[in-house]
Image (cartoon, rainbow over all chains, first blue to last red; front, side, top):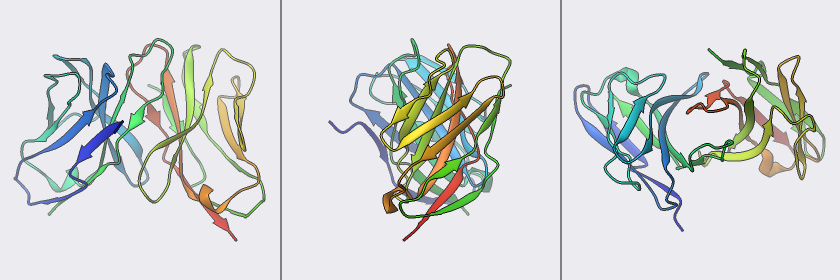
Length: 114
Length: 114
């Protein structure tokens, strides 16, 4: 049971380049989300999904796109990378909250935009 | 909007001693959940402890316990018998009932001195 798998672990981009951060979970979780972690700011929600075909914006969605075509996968796309997107990105999943089930986090992707 | 504040950017404690990490939050809601997450140098986010706001009893998980003061909107984490493996960044987080996101504090870096 792999849990939440994120790839790549590290990535360096030049300003203006595009890329996709991959996230996959094998726990049949309905809820998936993307957070970014910046020093002194904790983690902030970028986008989330409550099921295949359903996505919504979080706190800091600008510059990022998501889609959810399957229950297992929730990729995060940077269309035109900017230095302000230098951060550590976490994907997290859980069963849908009926109560508050614990979030399962991936191990993160460290992204540097030069 | 809810906010979570961790006023101690860094803390240190001697091995085997007890340390308390502070967390305050701001909300107008009555139904919510509070969490402490641990992030060791491996970058993995690990759920340490969880508290439901409607429960008056403080949550406990082995050496980890919380002091939940609902009226004061305070949620501190006590680590007893500190071990070297407890060294990590600790994040306090808040989630409203029915909400789709966690709101994180800025984090407290805990150092354990041998």
